[in-house]
Length: 154
Length: 151
Image 1 (cartoon, rainbow over the protein chains, first blue to last red):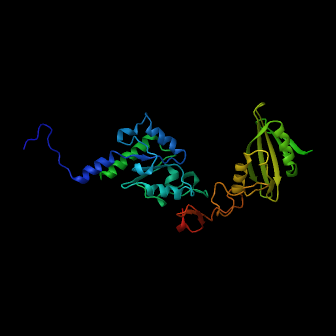
Image 2 (spheres, each protein chain N blue to C red; image 1 turned 135 degrees about the vertical axis):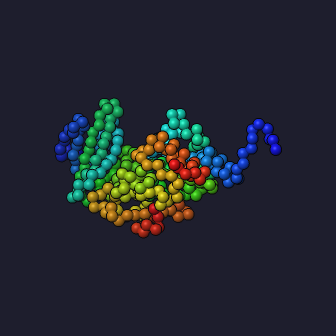
Image 3 (tube, chains in turn purple, blue; image 1 turned 45 degrees about the horizontal axis):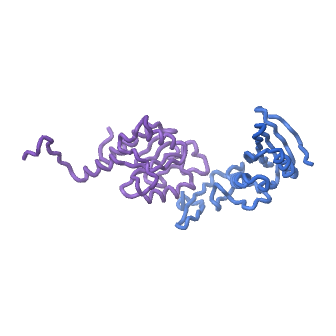
């Protein structure tokens, strides 16, 4: 049956949903320390993260799909971070940005820093660096998109 | 009249005054009359005593001076009656160094939860005893030594 010159593309509903979700990840503004500066640079014009559908940094957890934990998570902030994560609607994803968030970093001997934000919230993608460059965070976002679309990385 | 024990000049040219803590209020009143403002309060743990260091700044002359007070019983008179800015600074020093400022109306912790054990910037603070913080539904913070009860 001829349907015009455009042709027919068949897919499953799951794949269409994954495609839509992965290309409209709205991040939550979760800048806790100095990594937030690099997160702002990622959102700005030079490495424009809007090319990948993440242009709007929402200030409300109810409007966002992705939490970029950017900066040192202190023990006093961790229960609040957990609560903000629980206020986000499903499906929700977490990127741990920077070495402080991954395992403590330079504050690993300190008294006040949570050694790894994965003790508090489940983390999908880890972006190492102190701080990670905007290109690294963009690569982490692309990795998360591939993870959502169930593609292998290499 | 207050008595300055010793006066020196550091590398950056800032005047450093060492005084006894009984003369502190009198000296601060004198410098307040000469239009000096409180810039910061810090503490140094010297193991046998604690130094409390006040930085004052004059905007007209752009002059910084540093006032050092030594205390052995962790008590220093409060200067919140002179500068309201000292309220927050003295609470921070009480929180992290354990210095009691006598005459402060609201001396409680400012950065750490109220249940926290010890003062972290002291030399005798044991870093091996890790404390964990959790928040219940009413917003009250709890501190525990058990890592299952918080983060």
